[in-house]
Amino acid sequence: MAGTSLTAGQGALLPDRHPQVDFFVCDIFDALPKDDIATMEHPVFTLSTRPDRRILSYEHRGTTVEVTPSMKGLATIHDKDILIFCISQLMAAINAGRAVSRTLTLRAHDLLVATNRETSGDAYRRLKEAFERLAGTRITTNITTGDTEVTSGFGLIESWEIVKRSRGGRMVSVTVTLSDWLFRAVLSKSVLTLSRDYFRLRKPLERRIYELARKHCGKQPEWRVSVEVLLKKSGSASPRRVFRKMIRDMIEQGHLPDYEMVEEEGDIIRFTRRAQVVEEGPAAPPLSPEALERARDIMPGADVYALEAEWRAFWASSGRPRLRSADRAFLGFVGKRLAAR
Image 1 (cartoon, rainbow, N blue to C red):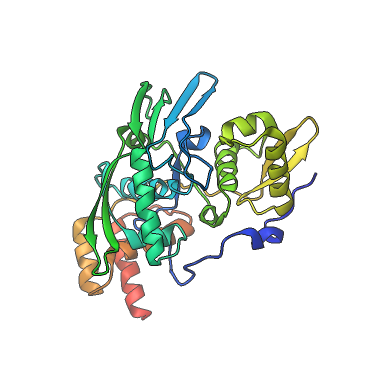
Image 2: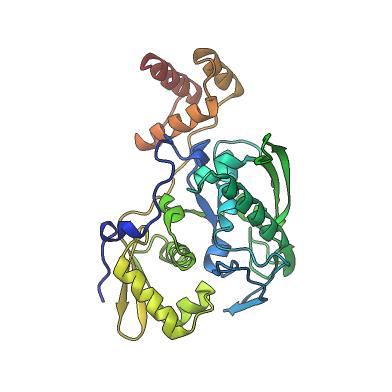
C-alpha cells in the first residue's frame, strides 16, 4: 500500500493559526521546536482526549515506565506542547551561550502562539488544566537521561505558578520548574528538532507516530517496524486490528510531516524520509552584553533578542560561515535592518 504525498493530505492538518508571526515565537535565540528523546521513544503521555485515570505500565528491552495519574487524569500528548516549548527555550539559551536553570518564566501568549493554539479565553483555561495534569502525573522509570540511570519517581514538571494575571483574570505569565530528569536530558542535549507542522497534527496518534518516526528514522533513510511493536511503543489502548486501521488511514491521508508511511507484507510499516530532516549545525558564537546594548542604541525600542534570532537564522541560511567577530557581524546586520526600514 503506497503512501501519498504531504500535499495531498494537507487538508487534514490544522490551519496555521498565526500566519502573521514573522518567526516562530520559540525562535528567540534561533531555536526550533525540540523534544526530548526519552519521551519520544517510550510512551509516557496518554493519547486519550478524555480524562484518563489508568495506571500505565510499559516494558521494552529492559526499559520500564509506570505512569500514575492524579485526580485530574494523565498528562496528554497535547499537554506535552508545554514541555516542548520549555525544552526549545532552554536549548536556544544553551546554544547562545547563556546560563540556564530548570525554572523558567514563560509568557502564556507566546506559548499558545508557538504551539499553534488559539488565544481565546478558553485556550488559557485549557492551558491551566494542562499544567495541572503535568504536575500531577507521576513517572517511575529507569530511562537514562544524561548518562544517568536511576530508577525514580517524579512529576513531569515539579511545580508551576501563575505569576501575573490580566485584569480579566487570564494567565499572562507563569513560572515552571521542570523535573531533574527532564532537565538532565536538556543539559546532555538528548533532544531532537521537530517539524513545526507537528503542532498542526490534529489527532493524538498522529503526533505519537511522528515522534516515533523522528526518533527511530533519525539520519537513516528509512525505518521498518512491525504493527505489533509500533502499537506497543505508541502507547495506544486500541486493539491491534483497530490500530492497524488507524495506521492505514494515516498512510492514505499522507500528511505526516517529514515522513512517508508504507505498509509492507508481514504486517510491517516502513517510514521513509520525504526530504532532509532539519538538523542544526554548530551555533553561532554567543554575543557579548555590550553588543546587545549597542543594538538597543542603534534601533531604540526594538526587541534585541528577536534581532539576535533573525541574525542567527540569516547566518545559518548563509551556510554558517566562520565569523571573525560575532559582535561585529551582528551589529552590521542590525545596521542593515535599520537602513531597510
